[in-house]
Image (cartoon, rainbow, N blue to C red; front, side, top):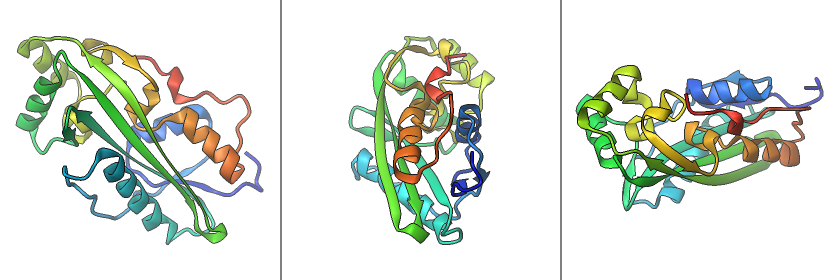
Length: 207
């Protein structure tokens, strides 16, 4: 990236989002936002994720007004039920059981802000995820291989995803935490941050 381009800051402590940006080739720094996320299952999921992404971006933008701030929020929707991060291991087991053999959607809202230039962009991407039908023993074996506690829906597509996921319809990187095709387009079109020959997170497979 050229030195003339604005600094890019990832307003997230998520190692998965950091990995996606690094794999794509972006130069950025990480500044986790110090906010309390909204947790209200009565709010429509598109509104809820957008609100949380905006809160995160604005919190960091207040400290770094010249930089382009990238924040995101990911939640799982199973029918009418919104699944966020489990509170404990028992809830994680219950979440995975509720998804078993069913289809659900993963929503990620992205907020991009550059306060000094009064620029902002928001977007939301949804991916359909279809789970395999597994026994309780198989589900427990999956949770033994990953840490479900910091993951919406208590699973991670990029961590032994083939054990639980039958197929995806849409962006794989969106399920991981950032819809990289859409993020790359917004960074280039709205903020002038361009990569040459970049690789997006949609190239990431289930492992």
